[in-house]
Length: 467
Ligand code: BG6
Image 1: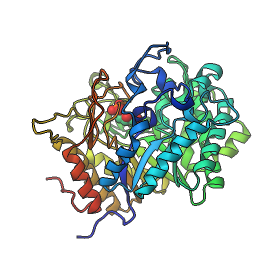
Image 2: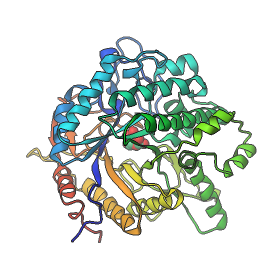
Image 3: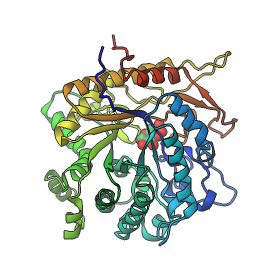
Image 4: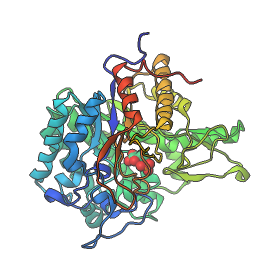
């Protein structure tokens, strides 16, 4: 049978600097906003005092162990690895005029290691972190000056890695700033909607400037945005529910609309007016926004529902969105609802809306794993989750959607973003470390490791259709 996946489909996995690297003060790295969230993005912002430690300080020690980890990814046949550059390794405080050479050299080594195996890097410029120096001294993205600091950082890494990295992303889950402002835009909790949208505006302008810089500097480079694909369904077919669902989906589609179409969508004017939100946008900003992304990338873990009926509104804080549970779906151990068909639907929604290639850059199941007496880890639950989602990706491709690739989240166990847990495992590769930071950091292949290797080798032909 011929595969539905295109020949050059980019199979792989995705991680982020602050969730794997550790070495949080090594080789001149500055403190990032993530370093001030030792309990994760839902934990308090905690000033660092000498002698403090957090699980992310070491994480899975990818900073030192990357050659072994890349070799394991290569063994699975990865064509692509998504990771991020820690901005603070390059500009430790964020406002320096010249970059930190030791930080730049680390990513040279990392990309060279990937090149040995023909693994293409897909690099996020900012994944849930920015230099804390910028948050403290300038008020993060609330300050227009941050656009310039980011542009300098982006141009620096494009120049340095232009022959090694061809696929770039600007801001991870850019829409999450609405729910976690410190993580997304370096603003304190309790910031007003106007302050948050102003900071978001600056970030959108910075994203467009990075797109322009990438087009100027990186030969054959492609640059995308990154959205949290939090697709919502109406809980009922009441027209009011449908309308409210459209409104809430626009909360996140707004970001894609600006980044893919080059200007603010019409519906935001009314939203801003009715919510007393004022955003300063100069003629120069509007000009900058016209430089649009080459492709859309997004994460997908779950879907959720919306209702206007107060009695039925049991919205829970799952991931970073408040979603009403869908009575037709099962949930993961962390309460995230599992919806493979939602991925096909989302791919179609995004392709209909933007007509740009799509890249699924996160998808996966966070679960507790058990090591058997013989040392094996039989994570069939993870295999089933990923299999069922990939079957739907194949369906979407058959629907005519252009999908560039798929990087599953956390191909190696890492520190979770929301609560900084190790026990919420996503990997094909197990890492011996627990929530308290105990463990040898030894790596071990799970059953899913061999399963994913076969999926890649067969270009998706080994996937099993759901019953
Ligand atoms: C996405 C983030 O929201 O979801 C990742 O981009 C994160 O950084 C992933 O790790 C899964 O969330 P969690 O909280 O289970 O790690």
